[in-house]
Length: 279
Length: 303
Image (cartoon, rainbow over all chains, first blue to last red; front, side, top):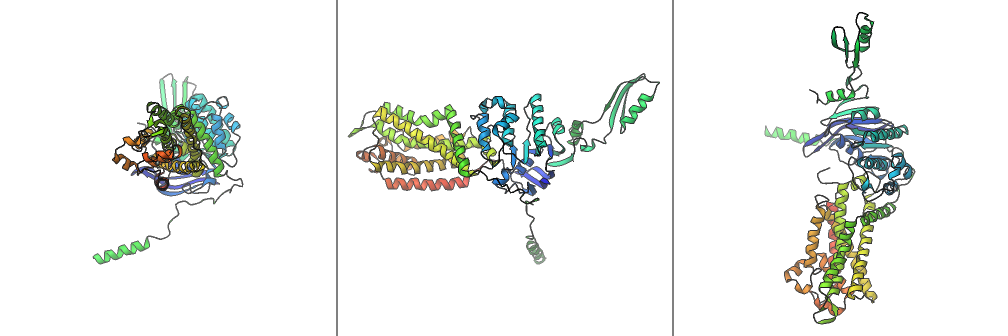
């Protein structure tokens, strides 16, 4: 079943085009990542889908309703993790999570959510006193307290240290296993690769590639670079069939091949190629 | 030639308003109309009120400046001007200041804290977060009303305590005066709160909000005879002040806490309760209209 569908989505600010005809379909239970440089239109897109922004054009349906007109009951089925929020600074983590639980018809257990988000030790601390990463985890806790069917995460791990990021990924995977549909924006490629079942690359308000992390931008079929060293020096060869080349090299008894490397394009290579930021 | 062109344009104009595509094509219909009921606006609103109060009273600077400030000013003015009012032996100027200062207390806890509070909520993401949850706008405002109600009453109690303990202010014994206090408080708090919400739209940022709101508020305290005695005010100032609520609030509170012999000190030589109710009522209506016209959930330029 389709949870998010957008056709020809458009948005500009004072004549400046931010979203220039985006089509998007996300099925129930999917983890979908929107990837793109800053200012590409990721946040505008996600905020239109969340009902935070009006769109200038296009047809949008999120959980079966138009986000521009949907009401309280629809909002109760969403979880939104904002990109920047510094609210509730004087409240404790536990107070804030409990308070927001009271907004929803069927919330999760607040103490459990605090624990799942790795905040058990900080439950009694004022939000003002938290580090950036802990603060983001509070945002996630508030995003999932209402037991959402669909969770929006806008650059959720910005400012996390590597360990916090791994923990956060584990949390997102757990939510996905429980059947939560997740739409996230990120500019970390490893994050998209680790979490997303499908992803789309946005540049200048348009989707320029879409697929799985393994296949996007022709990654699966792109040529690989094989490098090695033998008696005659260093060699480098581009091939669409690296396995055959390696087999051929190792079969030649007259050469002592060393430093054999096969380099297939990383998601980062594909991404940089796509957004045209590589020489 | 011209005629044919016009004809074509008309045809096009007639043809264009055909079947419009609906902007939101509902793909799956209303899925899962949840059987569980959403919490009521009142319940969420009261819970917001508790959270608003916690946040307010945990911010020491906010507590001192919006809540205890009027009592502090009354204390200062009362200690400086403590002689009997000219020609009226049983009333001291300090008592006049304390009674009138209730008006400033309400402006501070209703108008300023509301206007600044909403500008802050808009900037720090509170409003945006709420917009992403099933909280109705009404619950947000109930929360603000709880905050304003509690902090206003507490501020007035503090102010009156200063007056009674230090300056010998007598609390009224006549039930009619308490009744006056009741409607006066209601009209004052409602008009100042609504004007505060409307004024929050004027502030460009949370940082500039206190300056934007304090300037007119403080100016009105002076021209309305709250920070200075009525006698000292030029006629022009009194005339200007008559168009705004603060003068009427101050006059009203003096009518509650001072003996009727003090009437002659007012601009009109009487307490004018009817006119006071009328002016404050009109400001309530104007405030509501301004609120509806100007209230924004998000920051300027971000939609």
